Image (cartoon, rainbow, N blue to C red; front, top):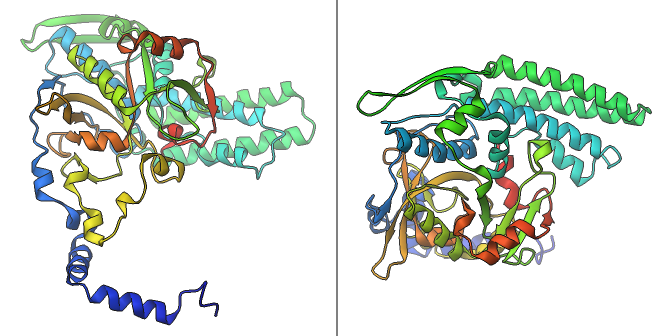
Length: 452
């Protein structure tokens, strides 16, 4: 045995003696083995600081629930839409169909995937690019820019016009079979290319494949309505809207939002992404003719400033974060002060890397989208705590709301979507005119779009 390279018996004995010599280690062991790490590391004082008290707040309708699906980005987007509808018509609550955009996202992603396969026919099958494309052709995740594309093309419908199904509430089976079929399509297209089929012949095969994708989606989700009847009543039960609408007409009427005014800002302080510049992620998107995603990278402080500006104008803010970090899920608390994992273990675990290193080394990425709906300020007027609407139902956390401590924002919030009017003139010009740097398909700034 090479004692310099292997774990020896002496190494284990030394580590065991050191561990058992510390009373705190024994207490930590007992607590963690009985309750788990986060419950044992929970800090009551930190939890107590997460009261639902706000200096600035928008009031939303009843909580929504994405169930067992990765549709957080859709729910967050529609939660920003419905706020405008509820406010416009003085409704108690309202919900758009989340199954409707799910259908068209799967359809468009399937087309996007097959076009990428056709575009990479000469790439090696075992190379990283093709392997990445095959890893998750139609994951549930997405980005704001992708939802904007879906809405501009297909509009929106009320929940009653296309309700939830077993496959929309739990997408695992549908995703699994659709992924299997699309991988089979990729194999057929590449095999056809290798056997000498022409581009036109391959494209006809792709056309037939898309017909099958449509059939599979209708079987799982139902067929999207081309038009529907609407009757909306306000808080006083007065009829405030009635008629027959197409999905596009309905969006224009009840939301009336200029989607192109809303831009994605990220904050990634890694060496490959200097602040003040625009970025896109290679091969990330859904609606082919609308292109991919576009981000402007700014310091975290700017993300906070523009988010607060939009909240002051009584509008919620879509944001993306790494929800898996320093999170007390049952209580809905995102606060580093509410968990002392490093104190529990006696050395730096959560604190072993800074924000940039976590992004570079695969420890952190965007995993969830939610909506900022309030903020509490400290005595100096700085944000101290943020109110967050989640999409895990009203039984989650506190009536479906989470709290997000400002230091947590500094570490784990990576994106906000705001009206470009809140940007400086230089920031707007950069966003609108600069040719974006193209990031690799697997960059962490694109990870929200591939969650399963």
